[in-house]
Amino acid sequence: MQDTDSRNSLTVTDNRTGQSYEIPIDLGAIRSADLRQIKVSPDDFGLLGYDPGYLNTASCKSQITYIDGDKGILRYRGYPIEQLAEKSTFLETAYLLIKGVLPDKERLAVWTYNIRHNTLTHSNVIKFMDGFRYDAHPMGILVGTVGALSTFYADAKNITDEESRKLQVRRLIGKIPTIAAMSYRHSMGFPYVLPEDDLSYTGNFLSMMFRMTEAHYKPNPVLEHALDVLLILHADHEQNCSTSAVRAVGSSGVDPYSALAAGCAALYGPLHGGANEAVIHMLKKIGSLDKVPAFIQSVKDGDGRLMGFGHRVYKNYDPRAKIIKKVAFEVFEETGRSPLLDIALELERIALEDDYFVNRKLYPNVDFYSGLIYQAMGFPLDMFPVLFAIGRVPGWLAQWTEQVQDQEQKIARPRQIYLGEEERAYMPIEVRPKNRIDEQKFGICRL
Ligand code: ACO
Image (tube, rainbow, N blue to C red):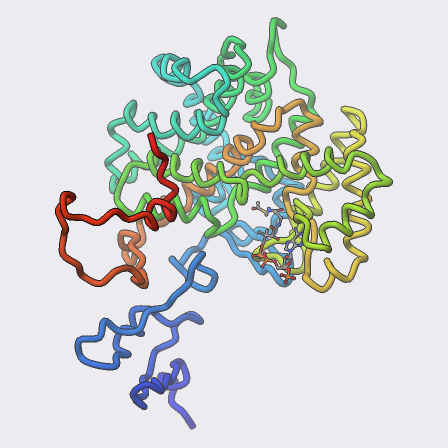
């Protein structure tokens, strides 16, 4: 019978040398650094793991979000996403993500008060925002402005001070809807709307977005609730691209505003925060129900993808998509049904029966219906990733806070496999031969 230590280990034989190595397994993982002992010669650097896109590399230990992609499970701090979407609010879920427990009544009241009292921005933020071009993309404005907040709160660099960290968390959750709404109003040329204390977090955001000349903005409760649920569904998703960006930048010890600006920048990309917008473009391009079968065929023929379908992690179904579909119907009851919804439903119906999609385990993801909801609520397409960012801020902050306190974390610094030139001597330009191949390779323009 093997002892526990040898059972919890991996025996690797290097066929280049015939040597065997015993590598410990802990929590279902080996430490990549343990591979370094596997060498062909003493001056060999040692074996590396090669993992573009981190398909099978854990970058941290985390207690925040659990996903089982095969079973379609998503839990924040152990609570199923379905229960949170039905029973919680976004601010309560934010508290849960950051503090690890659901608040009691008193703590939720204090938390809500603290967030509300951090919704105003320094008036210079308005001047800063005014400097963006009239047609600036709101996501670009968000990236720049969240980063700029670090210049307003110099105390934020005290990242080892718990009280300072808590203050920055409150500031960021409080200010992000204000900045998001300002980015939209700037692009429309509308005056900015100040936050209002007597509205809910989402109600206040809707007011800052859409209030015009009315004395008091009253958010539609169905839309207010739908947006709150959407924010809950987007609040965290473990080590995705933008969260990894926050952690990587945060690992340098920088303040959380700079780290979250990196998260916003990652979310700006069409493969991450922009897919819901792509769904709307796709539905508009299809145009009518009778064109759906031909479109499905074109996807199967390799001519583009069915946007809002498929997920790197979920191979059964995306639990968020189920909840969103229900919310979509509630919103359309209120706003009137979009003709695009019928096209989406027909696409989903056909795709879920089609072998191409079934065999590849392609199901609707969170983005398939969320864009339709945002559109019905009156949000322009380029605000979709901004809405995603508002929802994701508590997740980013929870992950950043966890990282700052994690003694095992180090500055992010992956290795590479170098395939470039060997050492060569610098050649003065006077004697350097003309190199046409390089010009073609790098597409150099002749001025
Ligand atoms: N439509 C058609 N075919 C698809 C789709 C799709 N949406 N997604 C994957 N496939 C096919 C691929 O062509 C591939 O087929 P093959 O085996 O014949 O080559 C197979 O399914 C596997 O695809 P991969 O690209 O390897 O899957 P991966 O896990 O890397 O990609 C991704 C996941 C990027 C989400 C992909 O499914 C996709 O592009 N979906 C559309 C975009 C989208 O909706 N993104 C939002 C994701 S959710 C989020 O970020 C919040």
